[in-house]
Length: 456
Ligand SMILES: Cc1cc2nc3c(=O)[nH]c(=O)nc-3n(C[C@H](O)[C@H](O)[C@H](O)COP(=O)(O)OP(=O)(O)OC[C@H]3O[C@@H](n4cnc5c(N)ncnc54)[C@H](O)[C@@H]3O)c2cc1C
Image (cartoon, rainbow, N blue to C red; front, side, top):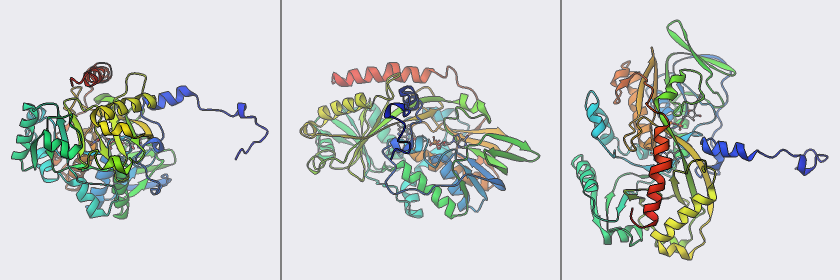
């Protein structure tokens, strides 16, 4: 309803298209643009008002902060969680929904004090953590452990080696031939693949909200619309201020991911390579197409260049994420066109159907390495009793819950160094723009070209 009938249509202020372009480019479009929020509303957590005291204050309620809060609350540690907006409105409500229960490369772990043994052990033991948490806490996260398939144009020694490594760790993963790929995926495009029987998909927005709701049920105090403005020492404790309130805490855990714009410990923002990515969800696929396109419902990526990793979710929508070109993050039409081209090429049966775009959004990943897939999460000692768990890169759906659990246990035991990640001092990365430049200007355009030519 127009509340001001005297105001002509021309006088009504329209959003400046440049603002929209900036929001897409910075991955801050409203969370309702994302394909993951469901029509059933999530709880809205009230802003912090007044002064409260606690043992641990967790800043940020994405996958990392939600898991730290949940596991601290489970262990009976007094916890307050402060989120600038509402839970899962950052990268965690905007990702591609893949639950990858393994690591792509292990070599960087050799440089860790324990050669990464504790992380590997924890991952192997907790590789189903997403599904376990959903079961344990009754989280309705559209989580489905249907497995993953990496499909390749020809057998790959690197993929075989990866499968053998993880099989030796007890994973159920097999190389499969063209016939098996065709039966699972419904395409003749690939000659070979590896099939991970564990892992699968999750709705990361609902899952993160579910962890936060479980934390609140277990006694954590959760406040939304409470951006932390400052974090200052107050004797042996820390005073954390939001616009309308203050939390005084013994310990602080920062889980703000892309820390840009924050005035407290601003140097954390220099520890990472940010990268914008866009997500697309189609309207539910027609039944006839669902019978032949990915009938096994595995999470599918193409090897080596996974330009359009595909998930079919519980509403039968196709969901993917890709990296937009420089300045093009808001261009939904272009990326939907490219997705359709890929689908038509890979699944020729899809040409007979009119697929429609339901949602288009962007988000930002924060990585600790400018080498793709070597972006291990970071755990920083920022100051006395101030820790940060961030830079989860593209592996947040498993790493957020897993590392949050490990950090919570370490803090509850009063031994922060016992977390499975090495405790490091925050260090600025070299050439912060390098990763984005390489990925958006060089790697992705080259991969798109090779894929179009059928040479990827
Ligand atoms: C398009 C896309 C696709 C992806 N695909 C996958 C995938 O398929 N599988 C996978 O495992 N990972 C994927 N990822 C990566 C994954 O989403 C991230 O690793 C993960 O969400 C990071 O979680 P987080 O909790 O560290 O950060 P976030 O979810 O960004 O949470 C940080 C929170 O901190 C809050 N915050 C910031 N500043 C303040 C402040 N001052 N006060 C209070 N709160 C503050 C923010 O509002 C935000 O809610 C993808 C990411 C993107 C963008």
